[in-house]
Image (cartoon, helix red, strand yellow):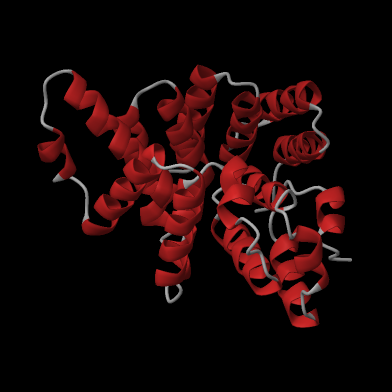
Length: 273
C-alpha cells in the first residue's frame, strides 16, 4: 500500500522545512514542520522541529518533540541525540547520559555521542560531589574508555595554551589506530579551541585527518560544521588546503555530500568543487 495523500502532503511540507532550515530561516522552518505534523505526524518531522528549537535554545520543547519522535520511532538516533543535548543543557546530566548511551547502542561509530555521554557523566559526578557523594564512587560507573575520557576532560579544563595543545597531539597520535576514539577526543573539545590545539602544526595530512573525523563521526551536521569552520581559522589552514591531494579531496567531498547542513561557502573554503 502506497503513502496516503496526507502522508505525501506531510512529507512535502517537511522537505520545505528542511530547505528553510538549511537557509537559516528558522521561523519558516518551524512553521512547515508544524504543518507537516498536523497533516500526518511522523518521527522525522518531530525530530526536525526539535532541531529548530535547539537552535533557538528552547530546550524544554526540544525534549518534548524528541520524546514524541521516539514514540513513533524508538530507534531514532537524531531524537535521542537532540534530547540528550537538551537534558544536558537543562542540567539533567544523568538523564542526558542515558540518551547519549542509546545513541551509542544504535550507532557504535558515533564518536560525538560517546564524548557527550562521557562529558555528561563527568558533570553528573561533579554535581554528586557537591551534595556529599564521593567522586570516586561515581567514577566507578564509567567504563574504562569513558573513565579515560573523563580524566582527559578534567585535565583539559585546568590546562592552558601550549600544554593543552601538546596533550591533544599526544592523545591524537596515540589513537591513530582507532578512528572512533579519535572522534571521541575531537568532540571532547569545544570547536572554537581547534585552531589553538593544532597551533602552527597543521599539515595537509592532519587537516584531512581531522576533517574526515569530524564528517564521519558527528552526530549532527551542525557539530561537523563547528569543527570544519574552526579549522579555517587555524594558522596554516590555507597552506594545508593547497596541499590536499586529489584523493584527499575526493574522500572529503564524498563525506561532505552525505552530511546535511553544511554550507556551500564552507565547502568552497576547502576547495571541494
